[in-house]
Length: 91
Image 1 (cartoon, rainbow, N blue to C red):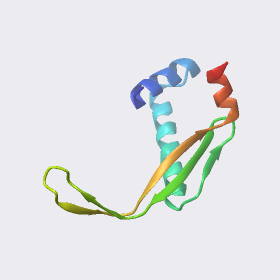
Image 2 (tube, rainbow, N blue to C red; image 1 turned 90 degrees about the horizontal axis):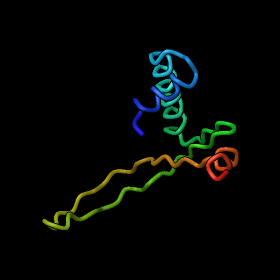
Image 3 (tube, rainbow, N blue to C red; image 1 turned 135 degrees about the vertical axis):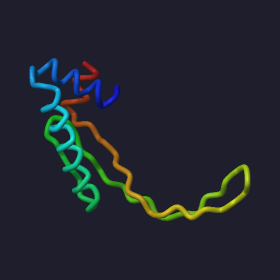
């Protein structure tokens, strides 16, 4: 599912115009990004939690050329669905 598909589905389900849904989704993504960047968890009741995981810098080697490259530290975001959301998928 793409972001556009999600926006279309939410718009059709709620009856809210697509432009409003798109702005709301973007605002949610921006808000989550601000907190995750500061290594804070973001929990949305009945939906789930966005967990930041910091990856340390490391050296990787290109398998074709053998050239080594230093990858800088990064923050990965892991989504952990809530029990309520998981139950909706399982039944």
